Image (cartoon, rainbow, N blue to C red):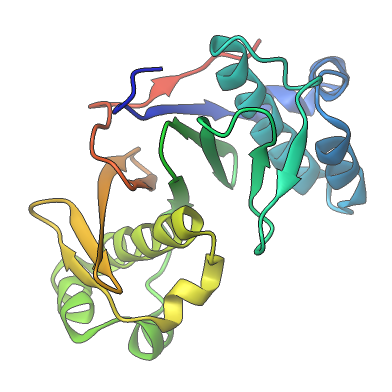
Length: 215
């Protein structure tokens, strides 16, 4: 991995509806991910969690690391990291039948969402006036662009949804945001029915994510 470059992967999880593929990828995952998958009651949630684990494993393999044998730990807010590879940071997100995963040499977060209806009540409660003006201009897609930006930033800092309660400066043209006097960089991606954002402490994003055919 280049020092100042973030790698981003996406995949479709529909093929995991096959029990053959489901258990093939399940067996290659670390114990914590297996337990998480089996704790989910809804089969579609299990498939998404498995797809997330499989995409993480794919990215780690490209870095010469076995996902099954790696040692994992969790930050204060539950964000996983590799105990023996502090130079590698990763984040994962999923929505409906799509999964997005990012790897970087700096703290990184990503979020992908299916573009549904705009939740204006949520926007009025959590988003800034400028963000609400942006949503009024761009509608539902604008809402989910703001949402994925905030989610990806929350994953970068490790604070998760707590980021929704904080004020931040966002420059959509320069692709930077400032939270508590610290600058972060982000890149937006459009996947048709989905939008995604990757946020990182460093700049340097691919023009397009790599679509991974896990089969």
